[in-house]
Picture 1 (spheres, helix red, strand yellow):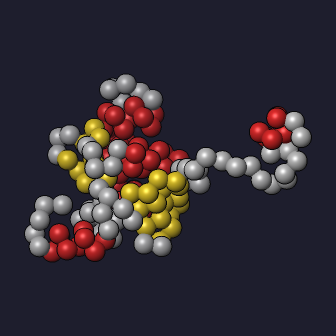
Picture 2 (tube, rainbow, N blue to C red; picture 1 turned 90 degrees about the vertical axis):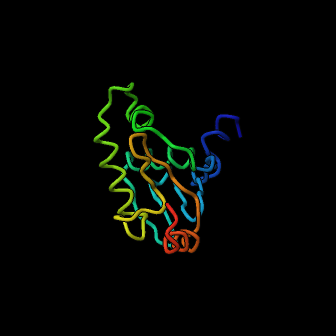
Length: 135
């Protein structure tokens, strides 16, 4: 088998080993290759844009990402991109991963700055919410 065959998977029909496309943050598993997210054994399909947005947040978990940084990563624009697009995609992502999208515990808004993906398990998040801590 040639080196090219090895790289392309020829000689091993149906088998091409790909690098891992899965990022795990707390209970959230983001699979960017298949545009899927799973949390607590619930799997949801993502649009390519949602997948890129969530991937960016996951890579930068527990850090604040500005809307401009997200626009630049996802759409490739400079700081003049439409941050309203980001807000819309964050809302759709919350519908797919949050237990209560109106009271998010994973994708948090940092007022006047951006968003952060918090890696914590559901029990911990619910406990801090019920004790009145700021989430």
